[in-house]
Image 1 (cartoon, rainbow, N blue to C red):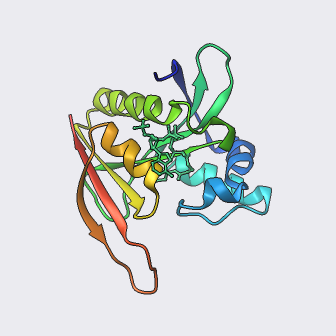
Image 2: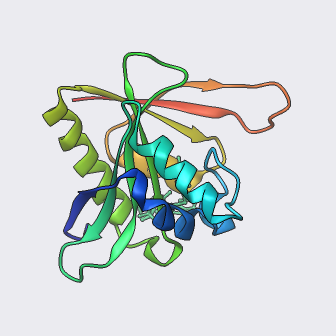
Length: 160
Ligand SMILES: CC(C)(COP(=O)(O)OP(=O)(O)OC[C@H]1O[C@@H](n2cnc3c(N)ncnc32)[C@H](O)[C@@H]1OP(=O)(O)O)[C@@H](O)C(=O)NCCC(=O)NCCS
C-alpha cells in the first residue's frame, strides 16, 4: 500500500536538500547528473529543477513529516509539448511505496496545471523505475540510443 504523502514546493534555495540526495552515488546512478561532490552543485541542481518552467516538490510523509525525496515536472530536452517526470528518493525511502505515491501525486498535479500527457525518460537498466512507471499507467513508446552510451534510454508516455 502506498503511504500518504504531500508535495511541498521546492525553490532555488533548497540546494542543501538536492545535495543531500544527489551526493549518494546509488541515488544518482541512473539520474542525468553525476553524484554531487560539492554543495554548490546542489544549488545548481535546485536552480535547474525549479526555474525556467520546471517545477519540483519535496515528497513528505503525511504522517511522520519525514522527507522521502524529490518529484518534478520538467520541460523536456527531447520534447517541447510534454512535461517529463523526474523522481529521486533518498535511499532509506526506497521500496516503501513512496515512488508510486509520488508519481500519482505528480499525475494529479499535472492535470491541475492543464497537462493531460506526461513523458518519462528511464535508463533501460533501471528496472525499479521502469516497473514503477508501468505500474502507474505509463507505456513504453520508444528506446532511444545515443553514441558512446551503452544502455538505451526508454521513453515512456502517460495520457490521462
Ligand atoms: C526508482 C525509484 C523512484 C523507485 O521508487 P520506490 O518507491 O523505491 O519503488 P519500489 O522499490 O517500491 O519499486 C517499484 C517496483 O519495482 C520493483 N523493483 C524494485 N527493484 C527492482 C529490481 N531491482 N528488479 C526488478 N523489480 C524491481 C518493485 O518490486 C516494485 O514493483 P511492485 O510494486 O510490483 O512490487 C527509487 O528507487 C529511486 O529513487 N531510485 C534512485 C533514483 C532513480 O533511479 N530515479 C528514477 C530515474 S528515472
